[in-house]
Image 1 (cartoon, rainbow, N blue to C red):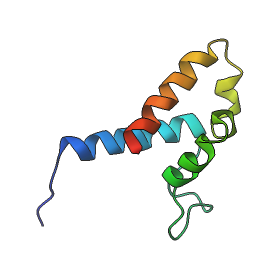
Image 2 (cartoon, rainbow, N blue to C red; image 1 turned 135 degrees about the vertical axis):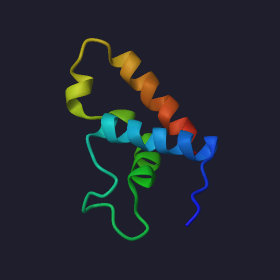
Image 3 (spheres, rainbow, N blue to C red; image 1 turned 135 degrees about the horizontal axis):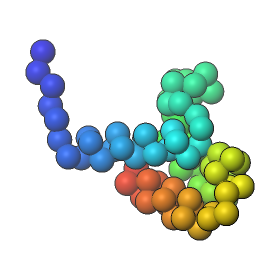
Length: 79
């Protein structure tokens, strides 16, 4: 079985990893079943308020701007 590796796949997977870290949710969590994914949940919630999807422990840190900026970069890569 051949596995195709590409920069695009690496970037996508890195974005998913960042979403995992920022949201404190795993892509395989029970709430993400069928066609509903971690990525879709973040994309839908992001348009309303990023603070709704970022782990509250991260938002309680002193540098919220850096956390939000990093999450925005991850979201941009997943669009």
